[in-house]
Image 1 (cartoon, one colour):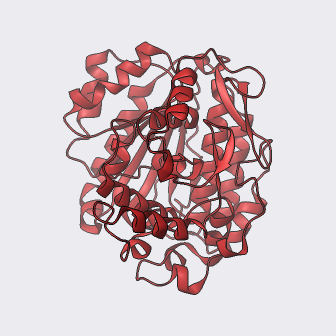
Image 2: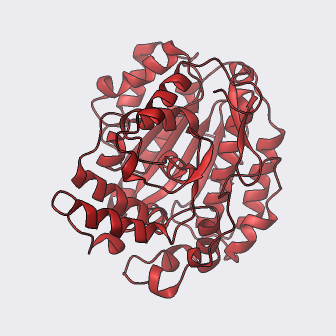
Image 3: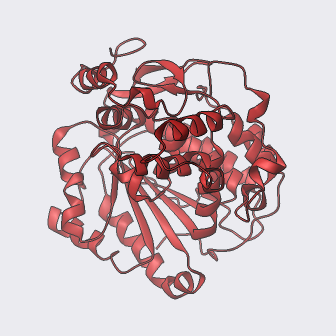
Length: 404
């Protein structure tokens, strides 16, 4: 199959997880955190993060938790990452490096403090995304395989080979991805078949351990090595396997978007189809303008996070009780246990969440281009933001800083 033979639960050589972030090859962009200096209250503490048996410290490591906090990940999202580490035996990124990825309609996040979108190729946008996930996988020491569609070598692995050096794994993957460029077609079927066979061979082991394989297909096009029926048949074969599948779209082309959005109906099992960060933020703002759809939430979704409330964000306005569920995801279940019932004590609930938000960094809002709290229940009707999101949705491609 071309995969490096590995034990999916093998432990890599221990490494101070703080090193993973600082020793990986630097890339020419700075991910957004906050426009304001980090509040000391944002620093993780024993009481705030170790109050429950699901402590992220126990599963991720203090240095990585502190780094994630510095990059705007909330206590709740760090808990979600810890749960992903517990339940995901391996994540596989199938990365489209076909010639169409040279199309110049991508959106690169650049700048310190308040960042900006700049126009770029689809490939540059995807490079940025995958490199961030490579670093995240290294910090979590989460076994990960990166498969470039048109690269024959299968050596882009993190924590897969027993005794491997995580720092070296991350640096090698970043280096190869940074030097790679788009070419040729979109042989998605071949990679899907290889990944599926690997999961089938390990199905018993995965089910016994209660784990899954997370598969992320990042693409801007339709498969060039299979008909629609053949491709759907191959994906359908995952139905009874322990997997989670995310399709991360790298284009706004209507035919491609429609093609993948309709797959969910044909496959008879759930596949998450998500847009890029800006595209998802626009769709969420139309239905739930009170939520600041921050980049950390988008990154966790790209990794295969699954929750009913998250799926509803761009489909309809959430109910008050669903607000509480979403706040549990953002701020942690433990922190929300004593929260008032929003359906009966709305004012008290808003005050309770407001107090929690004081311990979190503001997030860059790609709709308003400002740093804002995660939630603003006063903007539930949010007509101005909804209108702006609709204008962005129908806007021409980005030029300069922002497209609005």
